[in-house]
Length: 191
Image (cartoon, rainbow, N blue to C red; front, side, top):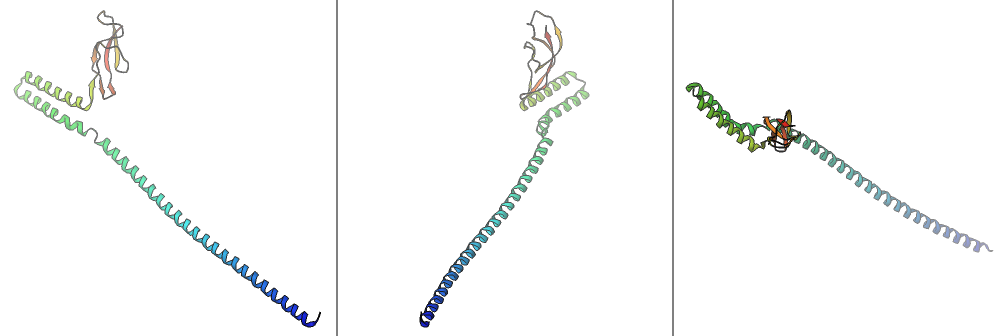
């Protein structure tokens, strides 16, 4: 080959190498640009996720604080309710209490025991009415089959008047408050 051809061949070869290098540099630059974009996008996503986590943690703290406040408020309301639960009943009994005081005062002045008895009967009816309105009910005993949930047997007697296991006599009245037995009736039961 001639020197001119060699030079041309070398020049072409160098140009091709330069072009190849430019292409490689261009591809490398594109890759680098793409990687930068991916990194930036990932950084943005990470920052967004961090921000979301912070917001959720703050919400969680607020919800936890709200729940603690609710629990405290509920406990205080419950204590308040228990503290003044009997207030309505006491208020309803005050007129009967006043009448009892009047009956006692009146009987001291006049020494009239008949009016005292009438006053006490009136007070008894008032108290009974208030307690019934609140849900207190006497337990039926005499003539009823003995029920250990409602009656407390203190004696057994033998009589032909009632069947066996039936309450013959009530020694002390029993009471239920709504559905709960406050005090069972003390009774005599037929054997």
